[in-house]
Length: 412
Image (cartoon, rainbow, N blue to C red; front, side, top):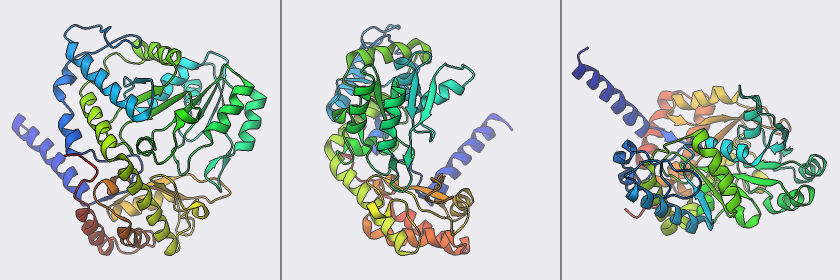
């Protein structure tokens, strides 16, 4: 192929992807759609520049020509501090995973013990089992599968026994607020030099909208997060704390060990995201939770067992249908995809079941869903799970997806 043909092929593939996703009902719990304002503020020209700095002083840049880049980053930090009531914020992590690795690495020493939820957010475990072989002992936090939350009594016993250096909470299946204040009290008594890290990647938008919990106010020492799930900003990571010494320790770990340039093009878009949450946040978060509860009820009404049903299904954007009666979770995620419903499998605690799905309503909420739409969405999901002909289900899904075509909760 000549160069023009190669570009034409690439353009064709991009167009096919966008056209396809416009006909899908996206219920992935970790994705979202930014607003036109945020997309407009995603400035690729800044990606050409280097904005490295050491420590927490934004003015101490390694490269020249950063005078306005530093001001942009300062202003984005100011907005985040106001929104989350935090004294220190760092946007250098390029993902929530890197934010977790950085915080864990910074706040521990070889031989330390960490208590973590072993569901993909266990950063000490990742460090210990990586080729680096960091000398950390990661102990799983006990989980109450029926309540889909931390088993507080059992966890406090482990804290008293092991006196861990860090306790990392926050889950990939984050249905309900965690017992932050109770854990912090136990940690403080067992080891005054320990830290409570709260992984808010999935619920940071709900925290911004003041509709989930306030981790820093409840006792968390650090919040680590991504910035694109319920927050609907550009992809990236973020670290929040009220403790200057913690901020400094994490900063020294981030640069130059884990990164140098931190993709400056996302900073204006992130600032715009914070402005939108300041303006529309409470209404936005209310809508997400209301839609999640409505879809949970609609699925339950159609005979689908739901994790946390006796507690209102969820207090976040996420729902966990238990699909043992239909088959295996991964298989049914594939089956849903053939019907243009995009979702993922979920691992369940043994006392709950063997196969689950993880659904998130944050993107369809952003695009126009209301609780009145929940029965229709549930019908499509149940039809797909029941093995109904995809050629019958898919047109209904496409109709729904194309109906959710107007972005809400934006100032532009």
